[in-house]
Image (cartoon, rainbow, N blue to C red; front, side, top):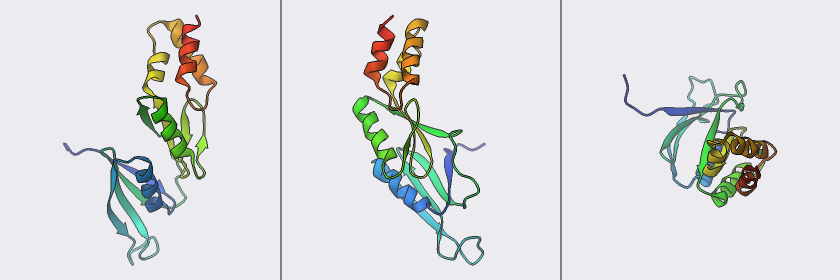
Length: 160
């Protein structure tokens, strides 16, 4: 059995190093590690980036330039728990700039197609309130939103 932490491997179509640089511009606690390049053994062009190791907020990643075969889907996403609306606004805007896309319920896709859940922690408390009526009203409000508005979710929860 291993006691080493897991490393998340993200498959890119030739943009792994660009993605790592982008994520380090968004998440300030990070660093680039080793970069491996294709050799004569292939399968990519000699000298091009094959893998880039990077770390964000203590989580290790490897960006792999594997080609177009496996694009990202919403089946995998990263949740960003945010202390308040200002922090959520920062991540929401940063991850959707330069070609990212808004989705529903605080989800966004960055310009590489990777999905993120930008979630103020109070929103989680509201939709899991022990009072089922409050939780239902907060959830119904959330389901109408793209970027989460905690104040509106709180108003909806309290409206019963």
